[in-house]
Image 1 (cartoon, rainbow, N blue to C red):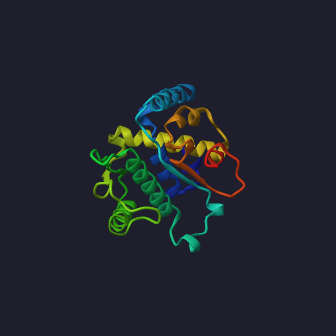
Image 2 (tube, one colour):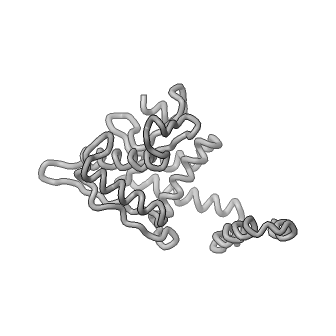
Length: 206
């Protein structure tokens, strides 16, 4: 692939490809089967963490109308996850023993500024669904390459994307026990798509 791009003199594509390949340095020595075995092992560990909860908003852009929501897909997903996280902490809190949470976010200069401002607004005005009483401060932004838990969050996002785009369930089923649920319904993860969707995520909300 690198040789082919060099021949085309497409410097931009060549630069991006080199950047992508550089990110594989840490595991290039592993076969595809070994890499997936490693991912499965991590997913099994996540699934065994009884006190962990996973929150996610999975949006099918075909069915998303930003003119109605007045938000981008990224901003709506952020608001939804914040709302569910807040509801969860409210549910597990007691009058004499309140639970508080902190957001850790992969560092991206453009996203960090936007989400910091959004979070400040949520603290003042609340989200569309709830006021914010249990989330401390604005998100803390970290380098995901140096932060294991952010990488694990990426793995969970990977599992969800593979499920919705390719109907792959192997990794998803391993982490699904950690999707937040309340009164028998899955509330931590939502699939924003056509109303007739019968996937396991949508069906669990009914």
